[in-house]
Length: 182
Picture 1 (cartoon, rainbow, N blue to C red):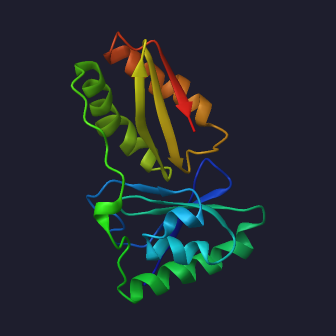
Picture 2: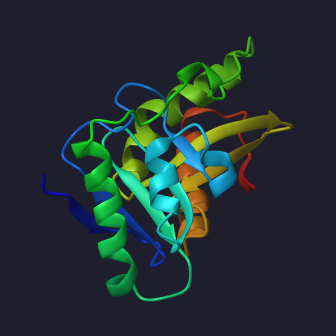
């Protein structure tokens, strides 16, 4: 098994591409700490290296945010954890039903926002090892969660304001601002 890696705009996050589905068609999952990863043998194994702050599982990639230190010391342990997991044919998630589901909304503006995020924004940020998730729309303000490589990225504010906010305001006049929430 050959696992490729790609740098992301966030210098603390590296994108690992195992050459196979990670989450496949299921929604991406963010594990901000070891305690949240109890439902994922893969994320648990990556956290077990001792070098990791967070793990994000995307369609066909894994974004890992490291603790302070150099990637040259961290990367080999993470590669071994990922390779061992897939070679052993272990499940990525043990109980899909236990994962949080997105909330449905009857608001047509919210439906438009979510559609733009899913079709135009999410694929673009996934290329950098991240994800953007809708949180709320109130009084013209769209609140989004930034996950994976996007969380803590130095260019996240520019992405939100110059990219996402401009796109949403262009297509949906009711949108006046976009904010990141933790």
